[in-house]
Length: 336
Image (cartoon, rainbow, N blue to C red; front, side, top):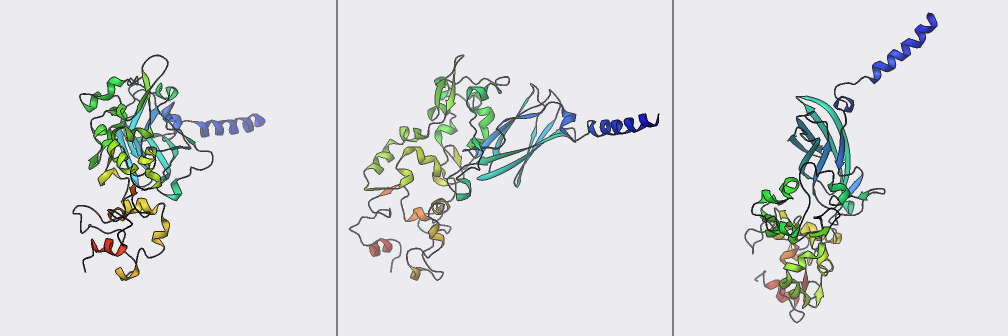
């Protein structure tokens, strides 16, 4: 009997420690992050998170990301939960996901996603082992088929309302901004995204980085006539490095202030006075002030003096030709 006691006590202790406890994933049953993949990188700053959970097992999903918090009232009617419009910071992002039933946290997950962008040194290269996550592939789309169809065709180019677009459910927040790109505002997604056929009929969407040139032929032709082309603007597939193809809070659909974009490559401008030190008591010409004294409603940035796309001079000065002295160019603003 005494030996049996020593056997049963450890066994009972193990059973007690392994029992389902409120606030753990075990109490929620099957629960998983379907998209995006953990330890992956994406090249879009706005993503949707798709989860699996038992039907009607939850009332709410909370997502904590860096300094932002998101709350979604969801019930997993069909076993899936879609949380759309999550905005990532450039570089590494850690998303803490909590599922709630009533006011009780019944499960949780942590997801790490890297937002790759050429607009900062810390975000241009994903960490080792992080593969690119692309949602619109047949093996990914089948996970969302139980809730809504994903058989795209050219008929989706001009939906009568945004809600009729197959993209609206998951991507409705990509058009939130003061300035909206017209094709995105009309939800004509296949205007810029190509439709690739897939087995079983219909098609899937694929990003086409060079689609900008299909509409903006006038400006592309204008730049081609210039003697000097800025590297990022020399190829249409690089447009989205600086411009958001959907919506932005800034003019020209810029991802950030024009000066911030420029210094992401031209870091030396922040380390030394720019142009001539006599212009400013602080040393050098200002490259970022608000507002622009010559363009109401805009900030003064690098683009106030330089054309970021092309020019007739090596430094891309606006409306400047080599035959005009730099002194005369400066006088176009600084009347003495």
